[in-house]
Image 1 (cartoon, helix red, strand yellow):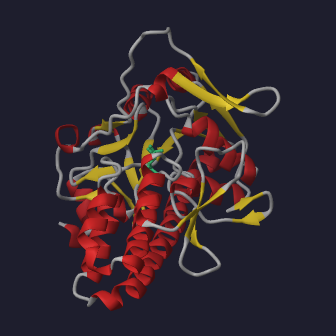
Image 2 (cartoon, rainbow, N blue to C red):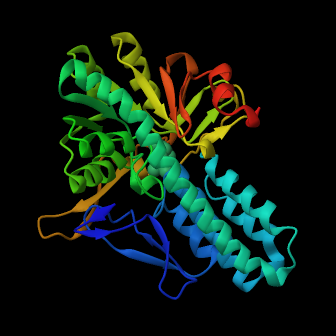
Image 3 (cartoon, rainbow, N blue to C red):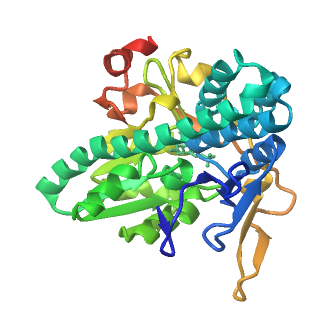
Length: 359
Ligand code: MRU
């Protein structure tokens, strides 16, 4: 994807061929700054602080974190994997990537591990790019069908499931980019996505850079827009999908699904294979929900009139805050899943039809 005419991925190898580069997403959209990661600890820290984030991207950065660890201490594979795996709990892509790295590296002697780790991390990144491209193709058909009936397609999305949340293209935004590139008129309602505002900051930035018409709306506006017929389809990303199709995603997704069901608006979830967790069934009971710092709710950061980044308090002094970062949308509220293998029902039967080897 392009920023100011330059092509980026969300994670890549530095020119020296070993250090890992990411965009510091805590500074976007105000500043485009790259971070150079030289150790697994730095990679873990970037994930914890959300300088890099989004389910598939967390997995890819963690894989490169293992590669960095293998350069210096190839005998300490399990230690590096445990440290990286403890960074964020909800997105299963992290575990998926680390298990893949472990399976590839464990049989190798220590001196062979670094080269193999870099190759495997690169394969994980390439897999994600191709997966997201295909999700875009399968989602495009949905948008084409709406466009044929209505002209402009009005999509609502929550959080950021674009290229900044993956290695490239995105999941929920990939069909939107492909539709826009195919000349289909698309308008995107972008939920601001409090408390960290990934919609207002990252999704709006991405869509703007790609020239896709959009408007940021307060998180609570979605139901109203649906009641007025202003939303043709909801497409969101996901951090974990259970074997029966329950979907974890950024906090607030469930409320959008409820409003969509009440208004007969199709609610689609874009899911790469790395987000499917067939070990779990009941999403509400079993998916670990990340609880983040209260300061993310009580304070906001943005530029003042001079462009200096300032942190301001937006709650009454002394009030505490709770910050569950994800929620679970039950499968019954999900119209369907858009995957790299096609679309399916959010159910064990639907998932089994596309991923028989995972059951
Ligand atoms: O806390 P974040 O910013 O990592 O949360 C991101 C989301 O919830 C995305 O919607 C999800 O990871 C899907 S990304 C393709």
